[in-house]
Image 1 (cartoon, rainbow, N blue to C red):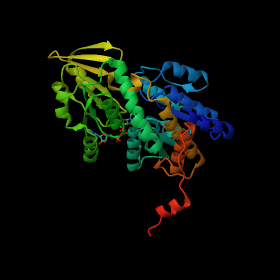
Image 2: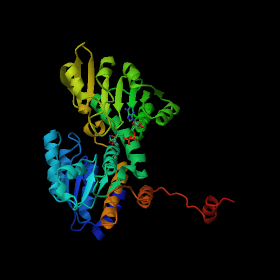
Image 3: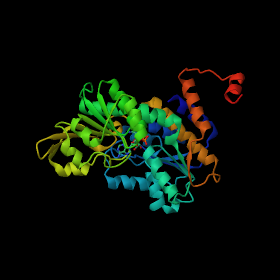
Image 4: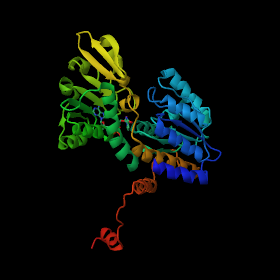
Length: 390
Ligand SMILES: NC(=O)c1ccc[n+]([C@@H]2O[C@H](COP(=O)([O-])OP(=O)(O)OC[C@H]3O[C@@H](n4cnc5c(N)ncnc54)[C@H](O)[C@@H]3O)[C@@H](O)[C@H]2O)c1
């Protein structure tokens, strides 16, 4: 992660977080550990918990704890343990929150209100979290500034699209060990995550079907060569289903009933609300673990449906998350956005802010430089041409 490494070297010298506490609720895997250590290098006391019950890598958690981070995370936490871990992280009196799904801030605004006034601001990693923060701003309850890290070009264009595109497939392939080529695979949602997944599936020879609710995105999918249809029709033909909408109830009871024997269900969206696992369990006559991260649901009519990673983020629960090259950019955005919040203490409103364009471009520049890629510079004559109307 050369970009983060450069930032870490500067943080080490400048100590922008000296005397401050950073709380993180984010998938606790290797790349996240590097971000935690970057804050430490900048002088922060760091506390962390995972943002998903299945995405914590216990060896990484142990290594971080050894390096002085307060870690409240292990793989397979129950919902109650997850909640208690959130409260523990917040008991470290954080000044800056690094959130992935908005959970730290929702907890601060509902159960740990004594921290309001103490927290300088938060940085949000994912689309679903940004939706929640915007809803808090709209309802007039948000009490500190939030930087929408997810919306930086150097985040969603690479992490959401290419990172999830690769790692979701890796999760599905590791879990099932089945061939993608020739399969009919339904991708729900053609946003940044969905298009990344669809593109990789197509590259591996799948017949990809896209379901959407947004006509422009559906049109994009159609022009990229995918079949577009409603989930209702797609359920009858799909061999695999991958949800990536950030919305709830994408695959429900009515769809399970129509699916083919052996259909495989996976989710790449942030929360486990896209596939209605509760109904699946209720409608099944028998449930068994077929392979690691694969549950077989034998339905009452004898049909078998296979759910990967309990319907939770398949790329983090059944694989190692995104490759380091993309997390380098995402976490560089986190590190620099957190520094921005601290440096602008008292200047920002309780609103959702974009990552400043200067930070975004600097990360792209550093990444290219780190990978020995050079780009041309615009000349004065070109700059004049582009800004003139004559
Ligand atoms: N697995 C990961 O590592 C990872 C990485 C990045 C983002 N995410 C999560 O993935 C989800 C999607 O993120 P994104 O950045 O692609 O969001 P996005 O907003 O760019 O795309 C979501 C798409 O889903 C469509 N959609 C919404 N409701 C739908 C419905 N009922 N049926 C069909 N389509 C529907 C929307 O129209 C939109 O095009 C979010 O929950 C996000 O937090 C996961």
